Each structure stands twice: as structure tokens, then as C-alpha cells.
Image (tube, rainbow, N blue to C red; front, side, top):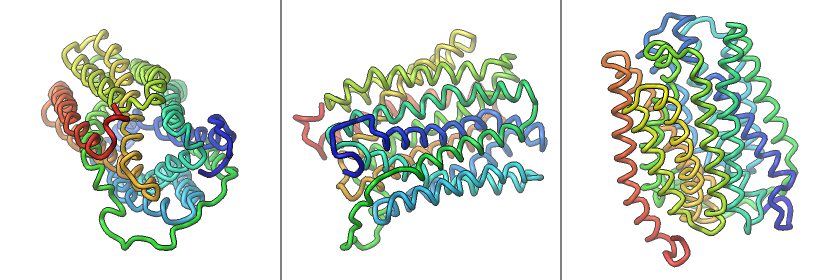
Length: 398
């Protein structure tokens, strides 16, 4: 372990890494629900073109993240983190300079690279600054920084847009918040790990943790559903439901569910009940997506995000701990990148397929599809559970 030697969870480095994660998530989610509206209003883009443009970041992140895990494992982790974070911040300036939809698409696509690299390195860095005895608990709390950002950012972005109608102001806010996160990571006081001198020959398993294939498939499925709802919710609310100010409330309730689940789930994580945590999370998230489509009214619209957030808040830290459990010590970066890459793949597929379905069929059909897909993912979790137990001690992980 790097950082403080005592079994102190809330050490200075841990706070900095959490703040950096918050700033990265806040700057990202500040823009996410508004970018479809921006492309529609600024460039007159249709829904299928919006899906194509916005999926670019997920494709690039998908390509970069496996290599990021390898770099985070085999090279000075802080340097990898700061380089990725710097270019992540720089890309927000690119949005301000983009004068055409082609230029915007290029910047958005390039943005996925440093986002993927920085998020993998930062998530792996948190393991370094935690005492080994508090790792499972610390990873559970770490996600709250992302959840708080998820709660505040979309609502803040929508509020700024309603007040100003100016997207340049939103891009500047995102750039400033991201820069503060870069500063926090730059001030980390950690001892560099002893780098591996006898590195394994490069192989596919060095970039993607093959032992985590089942967890990866589940992440793809759940990421697909998340990608559809989060990227098309604002337009759906405006065009289909006439609820122009409701998107921010949706994300606020989603994040509230996430935070409550993280706080209540940490006790279970501390006791090693990863599978139970994951199982109840998968169940409630599936219930939330089902409620969203079966009840196309205010009850379903505001009840669903609480359930989806509650579910995601339980299964995500469980999945992260599970994939780290089955990885070797020198594969932690690869394990994190595998989980995040799988999620990105799902989100990217969701954005593309969601754009096509909403443009050529209907929002209702698209949302029914993701409800069915999430339930299928819940059933596949039974395979994931069995595979995890085979690779760990079932007497310890129940």
C-alpha cells in the first residue's frame, strides 16, 4: 500500500482522489443531458446523427481504457493519471472552439481517450492510498463522490441553461471544475510503487482481464441500458411528456438512490457480502427500468430513478470489488479498466441503438427494449455469481 501507513480511511490523499473523481464526474455529467439539445439547436442534428456524434467518446474510451490499465499497472501511476487528466481538461476548450458539427464530433470523440485514461488511473490510485484493511469499505465510499456529482451536475447544467441559454458558459464551468480536479491529483503525496521489472509478455490478457469476462458482460448489458436513458431522457421529457424542467429532478432522484445505496451497502461490503450487495442491486435496477416503461407518467418518471439509482449504487461497488478480488495484485489497473471498458462498450451501444430506435420507431419502444435487456442481464448475473465463486473461496464470499 502507498500513502499513509496507519489504518486510517479518511486520509488526505483519499480525500484528494475522491475530489478529483467528483470533479471529473461533475464536468462530464454537467453537459451530458444537454448535449443532445445543443446539437439539435446549434446544428439542427437529427436523433440518429446525435447518437452517432455522442457515441464517439465511448468508442475512444473503449479503445483507450484497456491500454490505460496496462500503463497504470506497469508505469508510475501518478504520471499516467496527470497526463490523462490534463488532456481531459484541454478537450473542454475544444468544445468552445468547435464551429461545426464535424469539429464538435471530432473533439467529442477525442475526449473519450483522456477520459478513459484518467478515470482508470484515478480509480486505481484510490486502491493505492487506502489501507489494505479498509479497501473494500473505501471503494464503496469512493463511489459516493461520483454519485454526488451525478446528483448536482445535471440539475446545475439545466439550471444554468435555463437562466442563460448559453452553452459556452456551461463549457467554461465544466473546464474550470475539471481543472480543479487535476490540481487535486497533482498535489497527491504518494510513494511510487516498485515497478515490475519482470513484466509478462504482452498479450490480450494484459489489457483485458479474461478472468473477469462474466462481470464484464454484465457491465456491458447494464451500461447499454444506462446509455439509452441518460442520453435521450432530456429530449424525451421535452417532446413526449411536456416536462421541460423535469430532467434535473430525474437525475437528482437517481443520484439520491445511488448515495443511499452506497451508505447502506458499505456495511455489507465491509462484511464481505459482495454477492448479496450485487444481487439486490441488479434486482432493484431492473425493477426501476420496468417501472419507467410500464408507468409513463409522473409516478413512473420520478419513481424509476430512485430504484435504478438504488440498484446501481449497490451492484457497482460490488462488481468493482469482485473483479479486483479475482485479479492478481499487479493486475488491479487491468481489472479496473476491464470493468470500465465493458461499461463504456455498453453505453456506446446504447447511445447508437437508442438514437436509431428513437428516430425510426419510438421512445417507448426503445425504453421497452432496455427494460427487457436489463432483466436479461439480471438473469445473466446468476452466471456471473457462479463464475466468481469458482475463482474465490465460497466460504468467505457469500
